[in-house]
Length: 261
Image (cartoon, helix red, strand yellow):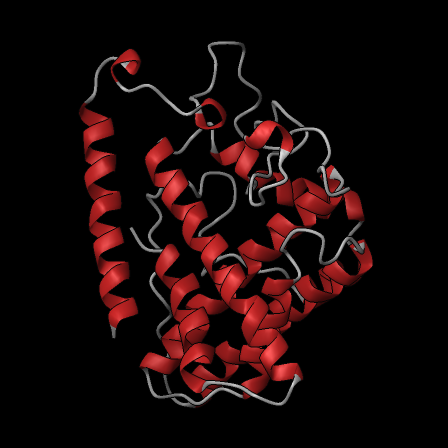
């Protein structure tokens, strides 16, 4: 599959850039894009706290502030709180997809509703699609419920192992790898918006830009934006009664790929 070949090439490029960055002794030797610069030498916050120099960082659309990125509120009207809930949803989608892809690889069938959820919830994170905090809470809860369902199906099929979850990747510094991180539905039923927003900040682009090498971070975001664009089409096609099984499988494969070294 050409998409799998592309992912392999991007993975090799990502690793190569990481090695180059690690061997570069002088930060001045590799100029950084403005919004993907390394953290300043100012006093750093608690290691268990997200680094939020700005209220948010969103640069996924052509309308973004100054053509570089919105940092206080989205030009589209998106608030920092909604942005954080979107970030938490995407992190949850990545975990669900790790389990879904693992099930596919082990021959465990999954209901088409899982792919439908990934399409709709991914589409909801695009610019100007959904600014409803309650709806994002519903998506986050459903995501973790589906993740539990996939794990139960694997165990029922006699598969006791779990998807790969490398623990030495720098972009998983405050929360566990998405394949190992899970929120119970009972917790989500009572969690405050503030608690969920805080978790969203922990995995946000604004936080990650301080800890991830800029080229790697740029590649990661570009690929995620590509999946969002794809899901805009797959979701609307499904609404019209059309779906492509290859596209259903690809979305989970893509998200799971992003979680590997």
